[in-house]
Amino acid sequence: MKAAQQSLAAMNAATRVLLGICVAATVTLVATQVFMRYVVGQSFAWVDEIARYLLVWIGFLGAVVAARSRSHICIEMLVNALPRRIGRIVTAAMLAILVAFLVVLVRESWILTDRVWLQRSAAMRISVAWVYAAAPIGFALMAINFAAQLAETVREILRSGPDEQVEARPHP
Amino acid sequence: MILVMAVVFVIGLAIGMPVAFVIGLSAYIPVLLAETVPTFVVVQRVMFGMDSFPLLAIPFFILAGELMLEAGIAERLVRFAQVLVGHVRGGLAHVNVLASVFFAGISGSALADAAGLGKIEIRMMQKAGYDAEFSAAVTAASATVGPIIPPSILMVIYAVVEPKVSIGGLFMTGFVPGVLMALALMIVCHLTARRRNYPVSQRIATLTEVARATIDGFVALVMPAIILGGILGGVFTATEAGAAAVVYALVIGLFVLRTLKLAALPELLVRTGVTTATVLLIIGMANAMSWLLATQQVPQTLAKLFTAWSSAPWMFLLLVNVCMLVVGTFMDITAAMLIFVPIFSPIALALGIEPLHFAIVIIVNLMIGTVTPPLGTVVYVVSAVSGLRVERVFRAVTPFTLALIGALLLITYVPVLSLTLPRLMGYMR
Image 1 (cartoon, chains in turn yellow, blue):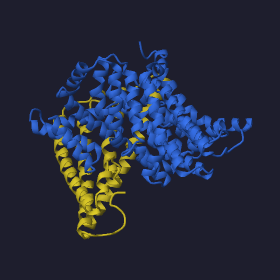
Image 2 (image 1 turned 180 degrees about the horizontal axis):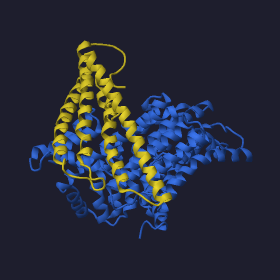
Image 3 (image 1 turned 90 degrees about the horizontal axis):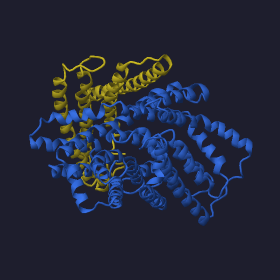
Image 4 (image 1 turned 60 degrees about the vertical axis):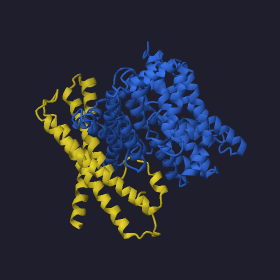
C-alpha cells in the first residue's frame, strides 16, 4: 500500500517536472522564432511544428497534474448539497465511471497511435505517433490518479458510519 | 443519438464529473451505440482539437499574466488607478473597476483578475471602511471586463472554433464593449457610494504623485501595447505576441523591477501548464462533440427551424442572449462557447448578422454568466479570496449584474458601437 502511494507520488512529481519543461520549451522556441524572423530574417517551419506538438503534451501532462490536484473544472454544488455520506457515495460512483471511461480512452488512443505510426509530420518528418502517444500515456496516468481518489473515497465511506459527524468535506 | 448525448451530459454534470470528461463521454457513448464509425475517431477529434498553433497563445497569455502578478504589477496598477480616480466619492470602488480595465490588457482571464488583483483591492477597500460585501461585489463584477478588453484567451479560442473571425478583429471589437461595461459598473458604484455615503478617501493627487504613479504603471501598460500593436500592425500572430509578452514580463520582473525571483519560476511554469491543460482538454473534447453534432446535421436543422419561425435578427439575438445567460450560469464558459458557437453561428450568418458582432455578444453574455448563481466561477474565486460566503457575494453583486445586462443589451442592439473600431482598422469590408 505504502509502496504504491510512494510510486504514485514519484510519478506525479516527474509529471510536474516534465510539464514545466514543456511550457518553458514552447515559450523559448516561439520567442526564438520571433527573434529569428524579425531580427535575423530567417524562420524555421519545424519550430512551429514542435511547439504545436509540445502543446498537445502540455494538455495531457497538465491534465494529469490537474487530476491529482483536483483542478479540473466541475460542478460540485449538487453533490455538496447532499448529506455527506450519500454525497461521498455519488462521488465514488462518478470516479468509478470516470476511471472506466479513461481505461477505454487509453485503449482507443493506443489503437489510434498504433495506426499513425508510419505517418510523418510535415516539417520534421518524424512519426506523428510521438504526438499521439501523449493521449494513451496521459489518459493512463489520469486513470491511476482518479483510481487512487476512488480508493480513498471508498475507504472514507467504509470508515464512517451512516451517522458520522466529522469535520471537512472530502472535496475542498 | 442527440437524446443519449444530452442525457449523459446532464447526468455527468450533476454527479460532479469534471466538465472535460462529461463532454468526452457524451460524445463517445452515442458513437459507441451507433456502430457506424470506429470509436477511436472520437479520440482522433480530440487530438485535432488540441493540435493548433493559435491555441499556443493560451499558455503564453496565462504565463505572462502570472509573471506580472508575481512581479507585483497588480499593486502598481491599483496605485495608478488611485491617482486618477481615487479622490471622488466612493473612489476606491472606481479604482477597483479601473484597475481591472488596465489589468485586462495584461491577463485576458477573469479568474486571474479576480484572484490576483482581487486580493489587493478587497483588502484596500475594507481598510478604508467599505463593507466587505460591496468590496467583493465590485471586484467580481469588474473581473468580467478582463476577457472583453484585449488581449483575451476566450477570444483566441473563439477565433479557433469560428474561422470567419480573426483574432485581431475580435480584439478590436472588444474595446468599446469593454469600456461600456466598465462605465456601467462605475455608474452603480457612484449611485451606491452616494446612497451609503461612502468616504471620500483622498485628496486630489498632486502632479508629482500622478507622474510617479504613471511611470510605475507604465511598465505594465507597455505589455498590451506590444501585444496589440504587434498583432494589429501585422508583425505578430497572437501566439507570437504572447511569447513576446512573456519575454517582456521576464525582462521587467527580473532586471527592471527585480521583484521576480528565479526560484519562483518552476512553480509558475507548472501552474501555467495545469491551467492551460484544463482549458485545452475541454477544447479537445468539445471538438469531438461538435463533430458529432455536425455529422447529425444539428446546426443546419436548428437553423432551418429558426428561420422558418422568424427571420428577424433582433429576435434571434434576444433568443441567444437569454439562452447564453442561462447556459452561462451553470456551465463552464469555454465549454459553453465551444459547444454553442458552432450551433448558433450558421443561423447568425443566415440572418446577416456580422460575425464579429455576434462573437462579442456571445462573449459578453458568457462573462455575465460568471457572476450569476449557481455556477458563477468568478464569484467563487472572489468568495475564496475575501472569505465571504458565496451566497452573500452573489446577493451583493446583483446590482452590478443588472448594470452589465444593460450594457449587454446596448452592445447587442447597437452593433455600430462594437463594429466601428474593427471597420476603421480594416477587419471588415
